[in-house]
Length: 351
Image (cartoon, rainbow, N blue to C red):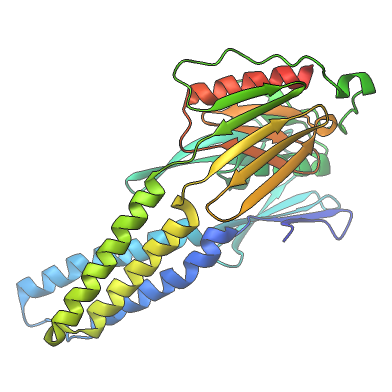
């Protein structure tokens, strides 16, 4: 679903996307919450026992804090409505629907910023890109996300709509983003006969081949997915055998909790951790990224004449075009691989 809409030419609405993780994670979250509530309140609260009541309140407080913080972190979403006719920006926040609206004047702000921030969420840190509307002293958050290409698109769309410059400060080197349409390359720049491959670092795990006017980069997948799958299946079999061999210990609450934990682990494993490898192919006309899983192979293609920027962020490379954003990255490659691949693709792109 397109999250940026402008049915009225003078109004623009943006809703932070939910994402597949939230879409599939919501049933598990509700199931865990329901099972936890049943387990806590299935037995009478030991009010008559002082120590028992303190222990109950302690662990119940931890569980309640986990439920609330998870709901805010995973399901909290930002919404923005910009009205040029009235000169107002309305920001809102909510779990699954917008609440807590707040209005701001548009004419007080001079710049749209794309920043990189690290915020604390419990004991973990979350790194994300943030789109801001700035007047120098005050900043209004318009959107946030962990995917740079997606947030770059959101920032460009908003900057064009409010007719303000876009300043990208996400990598520590502030630069004004060119919001003009992409300039088509001449025919002489679309074909390259002698691509230059950057020297391969000795510690690189990716492999490169040069076949005539074509460059091919192969990035390996991680083997931890298969190892984890074997361990998880072994744990599931052992747990099943234990319960089958001890019928007197059957407890529906314990079984429900084990089933929920197994379902979540299987979802994470099959959804995110299965080993996959990527192949990047650069030919005179297109840049192609192929993702090879255990069963399926997906392909993304970006014509060179539409590429506006090649950007490296630690272990990933983003290819920005007016129509879409492509990302190259793998958990198995090192920072030196990303730097070497970025340099090689940049040389090829510039001819």
